[in-house]
Image (tube, rainbow, N blue to C red):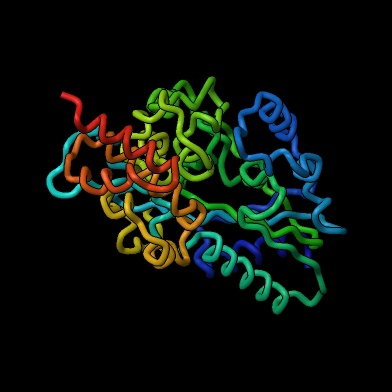
Length: 352
């Protein structure tokens, strides 16, 4: 079987498994690794020290599988009809105050969903091909520059907000890869279609983009609510708005996301309590409730104390006084990070 026919088989199987797009890149050194090293030197990875490990391996993906010749790159959409509602300014709400969770985390953990699809893809390839081959799977779990690989495989281009962006799918996608010893025909990279648009850069309330195609994680709402372990810089708290886990603002304003088709993956259907979480409940979130709420979801990435801190800050930003009882209790918490966040929120809510 020729490399081109094998590639066609890979893409056909991917479509049968519900993958939104499949492309193939060579297992070659990545030109984007030069920028990645510069990004690290600027300290834009903030407290994510793990990103500074295995830098050379990230630049040379073939080092992760002996004899690797090709990389199958997959994108799975989590787009929905409500994914692009305009980002509302913080304002008092009717009823109990609610927060916002990044859309990719509303349902089942994408690591599990996409990995299952890729495992099945490899199994079916083994059944269809007479020749043996080796394969190694990744879904945001190894030292790979995933967006660079996806761009090399023709799945889209790296946009000004550093997300992978596709004319067909927009940017609401999660990515996975299969390194393989199979010789496959490679896809051509996509052209950049951002043009003169700067909507994503202009919309960021915390100024996380020092320049187009550059992102300073220390100012990114997703980093601050998911990865950052300590108190949030007071100068950035207002910019968090109602976000309690992640952020979609720079995607919500992107024109390429307006016409993207909705996702078909049932696993991404919202889990109760995640799409619009009660801030009062999350401020006082207990361990057992946290485990039940986050089980099998990407929200488990954030520790319980971090979600409580985020909810307290969001409550201060909502202007809704219904969270005051929960905040008063949290202000007495043994965790100084939570107590301080709650006291900050109370001061905000009690301002004349």
